[in-house]
Image (cartoon, rainbow, N blue to C red):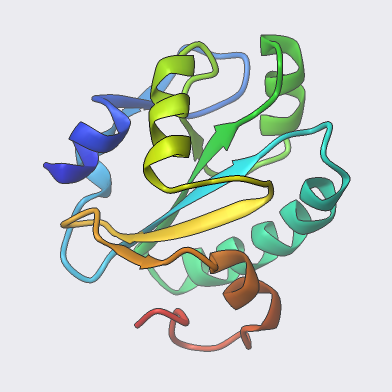
Length: 146
């Protein structure tokens, strides 16, 4: 339930569409959620996103214990849709700027890209340096946080 309070009832499934997923479906013991603070206008973000996509896809093939939620810093819906369209995961709807501001403040995000890993069942922070873990982490059978 903590994850629902943190992110809201629903998350966006695909760019430019109204299709949503219930946030509660992400919860569960032994599962992790990465909050990916990023934007299309940010060159380091555009460099890291493909690395995160590869990491995400590798672990999705092994099971369903890891999900990413894109938290956009793009200035308008069109740029959000264009960037999010390249991502295989979920997103906080761009229209929910208030929730984005709450998350940014809560986790002290002062630059992007930032990847914060949470335990899906409790929303407890596992690491605020998910980007570093993904960048240096070996591909393998386990997530770096397990």
